[in-house]
Length: 252
Image (cartoon, rainbow, N blue to C red; front, side):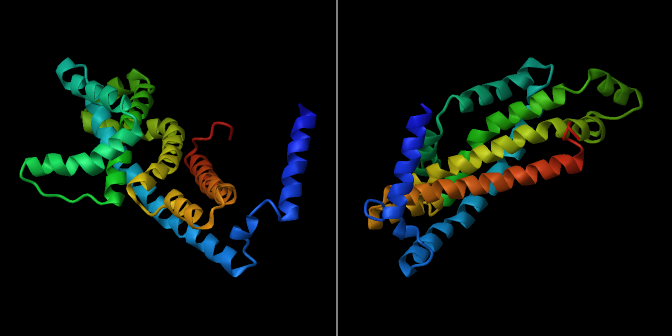
């Protein structure tokens, strides 16, 4: 097995060095063509980040609105939240994206509301809704991990439910919620690639367009993977820093 990996590595290096069978020139920054191709791909960074940040923010808001009623002891209050979570989690992202982009305007128009959803907002709505079900479960597990005695103690000193959540439960729960929320944000960043199928000019869409013009899928998609890798590593570094800042890193 080790010999096989070594042979594959030598073959790759030989191909890169020979320049005959490989087309790394298409992303060679020392040439005008390569540099233009690289900048064309990098221009998709802004759209990918903006899409991911807005979708993640909406997902966290929706997730909280779904999670809080879902923890109620009243069955009729918690039931809609459970139905929403199970229904949304069962729908694959790509069919939901198509439905939001192509189907939702038709549904709204049949109700007398004319709304045009472009590729950007179609992707934002889809990612936010799809991720909100998982975010709601993260909130629920984080809040329920706090000892019930703290809620009871807050009630004895006259705090309302909202005050208990704001001043007692959430400050402690956020330390346990942050790591899985960070993983969900990374998930959104990676799933934003699906926005390319409805024409949004993000990283994957630009890579696809470049492949069509250059006919070098290996080299271009390799650079695309490296772009996502760098983006995810930056996010992971920032999350680790934030965990240490908030005292959430238990290894500290």
